[in-house]
Image 1 (tube, protein in one colour):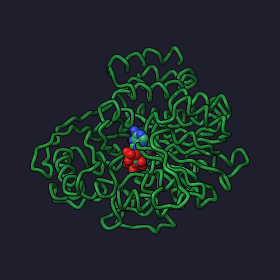
Image 2: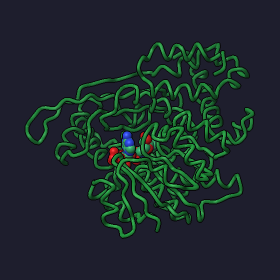
Image 3: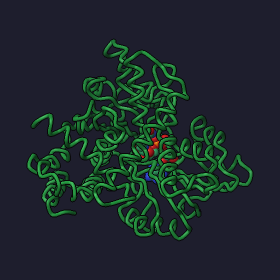
Image 4: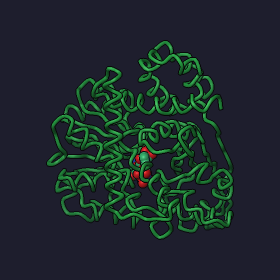
Amino acid sequence: MDPLLQDDFATVLARNPGEDEFHQAVAEVLESLGPVVRKHAEYHEHSIIERLCEPERQLIFRVPWVDDQGRVRINRAFRVEFNSALGPYKGGLRFHPSVYLGIVKFLGFEQIFKNALTGLPIGGGKGGSDFDPKGRSEGEVMRFCQSLMTELYRHLGEYTDVPAGDIGVGQREIGYLFGQYKRITNRYESGVLTGKSIAHGGSQVRTEATGYGTVFFTEQMLAESGSTLSGRRVVVSGSGNVAIYAAQKAAELGAQVVACSDSSGYVVDEQGLDIALLRQVKEVDRTRISAYAEQRAGATFVAGGSVWDVPCEVALPCATQNELDGAAARTLADHGAIAVAEGANMPCTPDAVRLFHERGVLFAPGKAANAGGVATSALEMQQNASRDSWSFEHTEDRLREIMHGVHARCAAAADEYGAPGNYVAGANISSFLQVADAMLALGVV
Ligand code: NDP
């Protein structure tokens, strides 16, 4: 890291003890910014980095709810409103037992830069709870969502803070959250949450957007090196929202998607994943990935283990943070991987990213590759504001255009700052410049 940035990083470590994921996310960005602060003294003079690393507002609150046995349960929820220089805070809610302030801050910090990369007017935020939806009934999930919104609603608004889904939060949860918001406020303010179902103000393609966008970015990255996805062997990790639609779009573009996973293990299906069956197992039955192998002749389930042991040319990590470490990266490179694109947020550890760069494996960081989800959320806000709804085709065209723009911005910034082909540097520099200039223009606020 450039010596000019080391004091800022030391401040982050001191102010946020024990928040390892947040430290990791900040370090990754600061490591790219040396040439930028050398060229632009004004950022340092106005403490832009220190300001960027300190959230504008952090909320932590209790969520009491009653389970099906009549017992009172208590969870903790968070909303970190990180930066609103470019627009209202925007970013998802995650329900997973691992959620604590450090996870929400890492995700919120990433979100600032991701949202800037889309070129759309949205600031960065993130939230969530340590609630575990696994094994909970519909009624329990609904009561939890209603209780969470009973506190959160006062902090939201289409011009203030607009949450969406993330791990453990899909259309069902967004529906319950929106229902409670509407009831409390007595306002049908569609633009206050995104990821809604089409039945109540959602956008076409929002469900598919993150996975599709990751594949559109991958396509562009391969095209730069004169290659395509067609005929490529692809492995996806996870089997949730992002993984399913990344697999679907890659298959549509002619790739052979041979494996996916969940936290219990992975399936290998050499014929190419049957996406309809995958959707049935995960979206309708809401069960484990092993059920896919039970229902598909020729597919095998491997309990535990690493999906990255399955040889592939293109890897799309779409599960969770730090799921692909240096050893897994080495295995992938040894097996001949040519490209890796992060559908999830920060799934590759710093060691893994270093190895990909050393071995010449094309690497797309999540803040660029998975920006299609939030970009389509912004399109949902646009449709809500104008009381309009667009066709699937039109929305998908807009998403493709936005992802091409994200790719172009990353590539141009990497070239300009002497790191051609380095999408990590390109994504961090391009988005930082945009946010930093907006912050400078807004004065000390
Ligand atoms: P889902 O809840 O739909 O799916 C998550 C998937 O990842 C599940 O298959 C889950 O398996 C697996 N997973 C979660 N934690 C672990 C773990 N510790 N080890 C192994 N597998 C795990 O979430 P999404 O698909 O929405 O999100 C996936 C990633 O994409 C996250 O990093 C999220 O932040 C990121 N993202 C999501 C966006 C969106 O629009 N949804 C937008 C941009 C980024 P299991 O069911 O066993 O837990």
